[in-house]
Length: 195
Image (cartoon, rainbow, N blue to C red; front, side, top):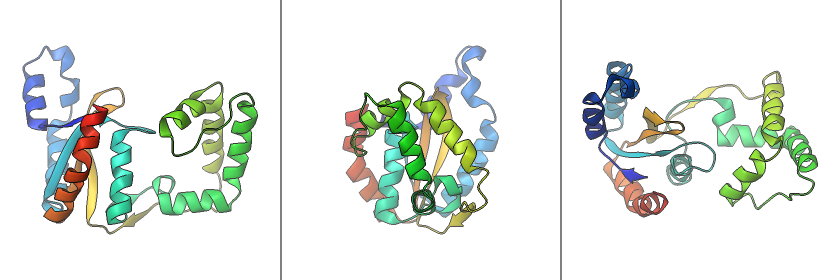
């Protein structure tokens, strides 16, 4: 993963065979949305990389949340660390899920949760993915679950475009230049290391 120019990527794809131009679908609508976000959050750092559990793009979002508070904008209840984790733990559902996963992994003890790669591998083993999927389907039926909401913050992200399965460009957008500079300063080396 490296900081990149999305514009250079778009120019390259425009000159390719039509079969490879799929990332450019709806590009005008995406550009309009991106411009709207950049008007409110004018200091932008764009990275290309992997997203999903244990990925750098998700880790960078967690880093921003720790340093700058909640991300600005709409928040799905299951994506909100503050509401989701607390509710999942206090409702007893986390214990139910962990018990089901422990039963599935009798011969494979749970790794330290801070080791995200090991946790991802552990969760993907055997039938764990199915267990987790059924668990979250069951949660959708719970009437006591937190609801979608929004936060006011000094930063946000915008997933710009997909470049492959679980890969793409993401803008990290900040209200003030100092936060953007600090973010880039602290994370460029990590991004280079993971590329």
